[in-house]
Image (cartoon, rainbow, N blue to C red):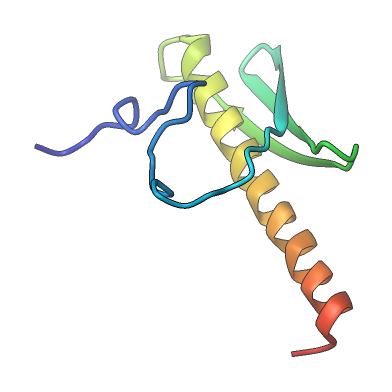
Length: 106
C-alpha cells in the first residue's frame, strides 16, 4: 500500500529508529516556522536554531490560483514545505563549507 505524506510524518518522540544498537548522543535542534498570508499569497520562513546558537533560515512562497477555492491550509502547506526544502539546501551548504574548512578543497 503506498504511503501518503501524512503517513511519512514522525512525531516528537523520535520517529524511525534507524540507529538502534548504536550508542549515539541525543541532540535536539528547534525549527521555528513563521507563516504570513496576504490575500492569495502565503510566505513561510523556517528558522533552524542549533544548540550553539547558529541560525539558518529558509523561505517558501505559495500563491493561490484565482480559479481555485480559497483554502488557506493548502497555501500554508506548500509555503512551509518550500521553506523547509530551502532550509535543507542552506544547511547542506553550511555542512559542505565546514568540511572544506576542515579538510581543504575536494
